Image 1: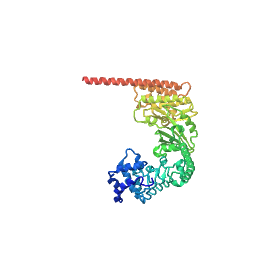
Image 2: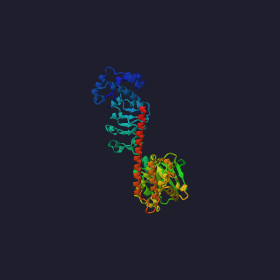
Image 3: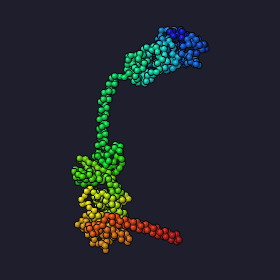
Image 4: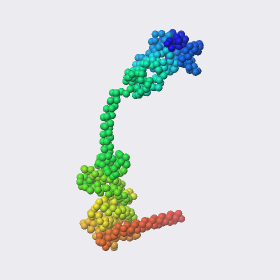
Length: 529
């Protein structure tokens, strides 16, 4: 194994005759142009008889083309490495500081597969190699020295592939970019000191470790503080960004209302008085809301009232979604109604038939019956405080908590005024000097004989519906009579209104059938003519 005379001498003699005249040519050109001589197979067999440990001797079947190519590469590489007598000896591969040729020779897998046994040292340092560790080099298991320093090798070092290199005494992997690995714990690498792995990335870098430790010790608390601040901001300013299960129910913040109204913009301002501003807004979940903002200390019991109102749930009540309690701003948030108020609907120029008005009154009565379960909740039954949806479903929108003036007797009186106002379409406070009292007295003067003068003509009453309207006016006058002998209860009002509503629906159905029958008869007559 000491010289090529005992291993590769026959091959080198054979190949040297082919390449000696063309050593200046490139190895690529020789690989393309040179062919194995006719007695090459005989030479290989003789080498194997002389030295069976040669690598190609154990391959079965032998690939003569690969073996011949590896001999050509060995001849070139021996000369490239400046060995003194390549015919006699090929002790080392020296490609340091040769960034053009080193990658080329590393690409010849067949050469490393049949690596000459005479090679004892491989130097591939200072070549700026940018790749994973060239594992093929480790097929030269007999080497005693390997220098791969000052390159740009990266990834994992093939630790298991180093195990067959039992003769390796000099290893240099310094100044590369390998992945960090605990090679000091591996028995094979314990024979080398840390100078073999300087700045290779394999050993933990104390400086980098200290930097990471400082970053961790300083950065982690900062990160925790920032997370706490973010969570605090979410909890106290924008809880609508939190998962639904973590959001506080019914509580709105100033930041949430500001975002919902585009910064309380004038475009969102729907109404304004001395102490109240009404905005339309859109919450983060897309819900349209009405926001009533009370400035200053003009509504001290707002929160206590809202905690009760958010529990109310009925189709004829406006749903109170929550509140905002801030030192500078207090607000009630309710659902947004797309329709108009009952007052606006009555004042409109369109025909508003009795059946529609009766349906609205029935909805108001149902809402009042539900609120009987909440005796502490008072409500406003003025036409301006009752909102209508697009399908004319009434919603009571204004409430008062623990209102001493909201006795059952007073509630029935307010309903009576609403009932009369819907039938005559006059505004008591605006058109009568004595207000509601004068309004009621005026209707009493014309009841029951002269009601045509006071009933709203936009209802276009028939004889049957006029009788129903007349009974309704009588019911309204009974409700406004607060004496104990005359005023009816809410249960009685519900029964009377239910019967009137059902009767109106039956009457409307009969009229529809009659009109349909008359149209059919007229069509039949036209056909016969």
